[in-house]
Length: 275
Image 1 (cartoon, rainbow, N blue to C red):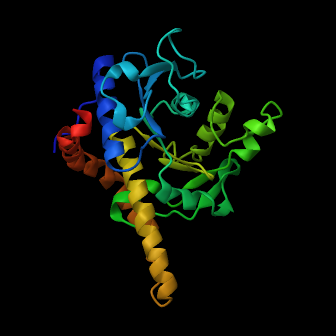
Image 2 (image 1 turned 90 degrees about the horizontal axis):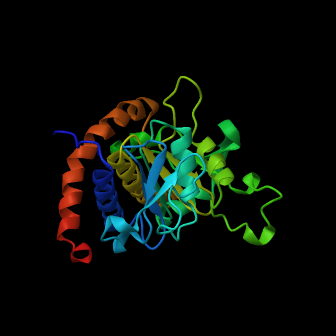
Image 3 (image 1 turned 120 degrees about the vertical axis):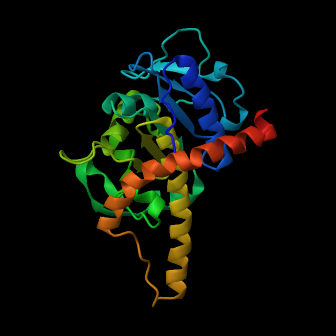
């Protein structure tokens, strides 16, 4: 299947961002909370972020453009996004030039895996219990890090404002660091969980970020069902993907993206909510 063309102009990027927002709502990844960004193809030092609930977007006019160097809006006096967590997107895009799009979701199916942790990994993050269990989630890798915002707070963050929102650039940089990988590996984790909050999904394209977010939620749902069955049937342990299978499935996932994208586009075009 012919791959989707990356947007070359601001107009194309904003249209794709609107479609991506609708797809993520259709698949219960975004509701009144959460958002998706895209790097400006005409100026990679800037990004666009959704400015209202994904399901309510009917025009590119609700998108705000930010500098990725500091998370500040490019133009003063323009529409200001009610989402204070635009720093998530700016900081991640600044750290990883390969990343073109970031999804931040509060999907409930994933939350349970953000509050259970395993061993410590690079950067002080810990591994989550979320593991790739289906062939379409090889992108999760052998472990998915959990980022805890608590150690990232400084004396400047008053106790009453420590409500787990990534609402300044320093916190965004701390989250971005949790997506880093050791030298010699793929430059970043495709998914990072946020303790008691949600997760971020990264992609080299907006389609990949959307795919990674949707299938992270699907993996969490299936894994939770498998864990319940394992409790009821102790003689039936869960069979996660092996290291070799993860390595083989990860590149296949990229091919799968453009198999499902036309279907997702057709679904949102039939949904009267966005017409």
